[in-house]
Image (tube, rainbow, N blue to C red; front, side, top):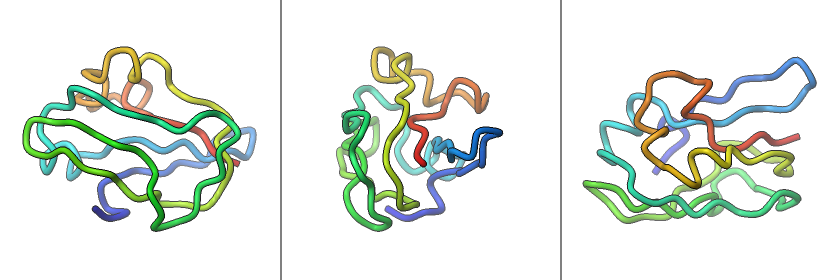
Length: 97
């Protein structure tokens, strides 16, 4: 999977928030499970980021950015249906710095 499956937005505190975009939702279908690395994990662009189980695919997804995870959206880990929302306040996955 590619960077085009995610949106990345700079936050006021300088972190970058990463979430699933329309292309990602279209390609994966409804997400039923997401495995997210722990806070403090360093991400490298194009290296494994998250594992996803969805309607159309079970796959590892590569990170769109370099950085250290500073925050996880526990709501989508507990209930991945939030990833199916178009609302970026609901469908974000992690914040990195």
